[in-house]
Image 1 (cartoon, rainbow, N blue to C red):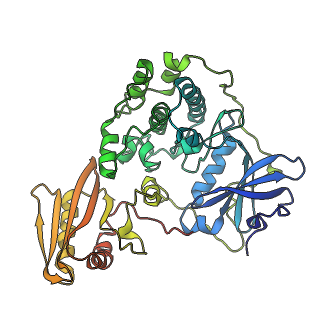
Image 2: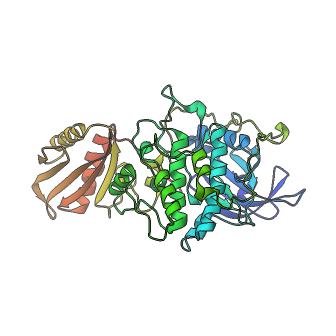
Image 3: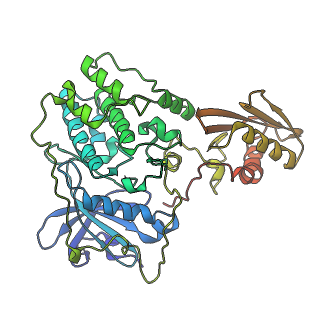
Length: 448
């Protein structure tokens, strides 16, 4: 049975305190409603997360972490968490309601003037530097996660992929790959560990570029090509960029994290310091939410009918996000629902190319119907061809192996001959099961 809040009617009052109204937006795991405090009349944004879905996809720790982060960071340029409540089936985040929408909507209309871009970037760096001073790393900075209030002030939101400094391993680095593809730092792709602060700075650099240019610095229809550009730091500034902004962006998008500019150096740069608004201040006090109006993050996901155990596995990373993004579908090989119109599939692995080639040879040897195998001398491609004719000749499959970064490969599998239906059946029954243990990511089940 749905909670009252799901009805979204004017007379639905949540916990006797908030009247839920229209839906403002929704994602894979949460919905956001406009709500009103019935006592004060103040508007809030109410994020509603279903416990069962969170549990099913292994995101329990992620939700708890988001609550912990938002409770400890209070800053003029960070969306305020007012309180957290829970029912038997839902978790409710009552957050500051912002009427200005996403910064993304402004960029969608075209590039911004330099002064406007600078103002937003100054507020972004102020918020990000504050988070870093608290040992918090956002890890998914992008224009869609930057909101505006009615006065046009920037507010950072969505700390669902954030990490604390106590998540660092013994090498002092983070190791969970997460973020949004076009904004993710090259060292995050590399899967060798990364400094959360430096990765956030890279994302800020991409955001600044987008504000000034109106388009992304790293973009390509081919995902592998895009990742190679990111890994090399291969981009060009448009001619209308001022020399100062060009120099700053070059230092922000330095593919070497050890030489990439830091937040403190950004704030010392001449371009940044020009016309700093008075609103950029850092409040040193941490948020304190009365226990009477909230629940502890380790209790919100407990109820009589749901028993949750924390997981140490990586749950929602960059590649899951890619797989859910139209145009970046990386994992149809591993989706339960076949997409018969697709003739090109991709997956990632941290195994060496020789292991991928060997596995494909094994698939060919065990598959129904005899397959011949031709491979390149450098293990960069493999061609499998069925010896018997099918509906449209002999089924032929080509796998190309790309080294996006050290110890990180992307494999593109495509039909190069024969019938599409036979190809899809081969992928579903033969290829997918055989590759499952070497694939780095899979796509979580997505429900509408």
